Image (tube, rainbow, N blue to C red; front, side, top):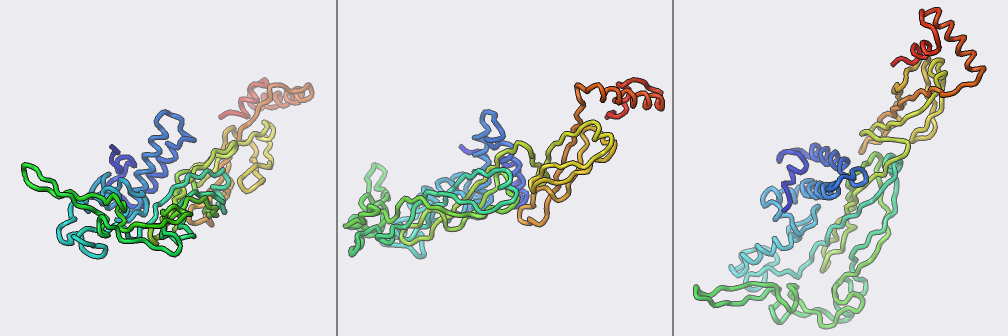
Length: 380
């Protein structure tokens, strides 16, 4: 059985959307299989995704709060409607059928049973998409291929051969359900089940469409261009409206949910909206100062090295970090850790010059020798 979704995400039951999203992003980054290779990390990642899918949508969250896992099982976790509750809805249908229209409202049929053959919303689909480091930062268009069910063009979704139509099922008289009376020592009981002839549709197709085999839908692979907003990160979920499976009997299509995973970069590291990297300079550049070229996600930039810079000093290039998701005009900073390289070997001329410098430095500080010089220059 699934654990409590609030406990999985580490949030309270009355948390807001922003808190829920922050908790999800933090855990998604921690347990993503591309980052975390520990045993069980992938299962934990899937569990986190499932919890967020349910709690991030008001409808599924309300059902989960009321009925627990049973209220959302068998349904698309995001954007599912009441008619998509699968086995859980069937429980209500069985309980209330035969009570003189106990379900009430539109869709009722003979004997008070709820007819199942009307328009049905298509299923939501999920696609996992990998981005490289810069694609996640700057966004842009991405072409994807998504296999999904499309309405059959030959029969326009009816499932019937051209020039024909479906007929009312003679077994259930169009109700989509059959009732069987069972006698027991304790009395007679009525059992309601899905009609085996029409499979609950209430209609029977005599001549099926040859293109789709009477299903009204066909599996197709569709090319689709989606827009990746700047600043996305691993765990970001994008919703593409009406690009899920086609609905049945003219019902609306479902949605496509794209879950993003960002590849690691060899040079750059991301920390929220900051980008971090390292650069190496010589000990002479550290002593005298310099202006060097460094790589950023925007290209090559000048970085001023102040004279007397100490090893592992962090210098900042403002506004060269990650754009804020939803507000790309605002960007973080690029933080560069400067590594000072001490040579293991020097030539004769360099050694003589360093010895001269060491003597000058030693006479002014009271410390002699090359080691004393380097100690003074590169003290941390």
